[in-house]
Image (tube, rainbow, N blue to C red):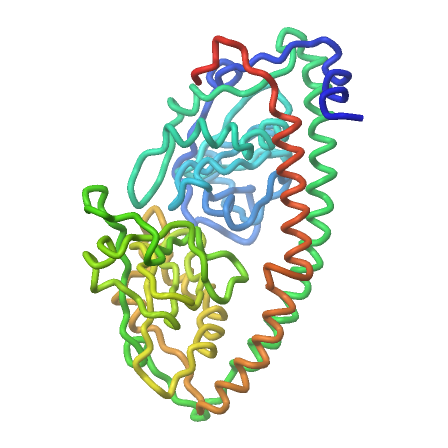
Length: 419
């Protein structure tokens, strides 16, 4: 059965109206919750950063809790609220949705909830479509921290089947959700299998990188390399963008990636020449230094210029092997993230000075090669993005995205053509 025939049957003559979010619900901003408030048990609580790192499309339980006394003072999500992280270091993640299916939960600042009478998972799926993203991008503000206000979100239009008949509308929304959930369930099963393999890889990696006192030499990163914080060309820079030198941003550095070869943007030779101090030779290490994805590490295959959210390590110590150091820093990602959170800012951040002082173990060059060779094999089995489970997950995700955009691509009424 074709998509058109199926959707015609599902809608059964009902029209779909594109309505501004401000007309179908209201936005409520979170307040006051900080990570230091978390305790082992108590009242459920969600911090905005967890929407990026802990949660998928929907959830009915939290990972963290706060005291009942503090919870009385803070704003709370109810079942069927759509939770939104309203700040991010990149455009793709800002306004990332979480369909809340549980009981009351406190929400932090830098996130808001959307209270409505629709199917919350229907809205969450729509928030991931390119149609929504295209509308959202018009309202993003900020430089290092990207954000969208509730006022601007209220202007974004979403497709609501027969809004004058809520019962039928919810039935249509539920059927679309059922189909899309079937695709995400297949991806979830494969992801669970991949996570099991990653745990096995992490176990052997930690064993190989555990050294007894006095067994190896310990050096700071600034002792083994030249540390450089990247820079983004100003819009006024002449000849900035071109096709000669790689320009790397945190969004180019994917989980499981070892070598970065094709970032999304490139600079002209003239643009790169205007930033000689941040030109990074091939075979160096790039480490993200801000936000929820802080601590992701890759080796750059080509000469590049990273943006200001990346610290680069240009090795100067011949006793250190770059492949070995890649695995060490990858293993230290949680440590880097925790250190970045000590800054107390809106986003976790580790500056160049603190980054330079990080201490790493340096065994003999032969031992480094042995460890790197073993971990490279595990890494290829676990994290390869062109074969095995990750490749299958990528294909399933593309399948989900295809049908999601297809099922939610209703014709627009003329009144909202310009939205």
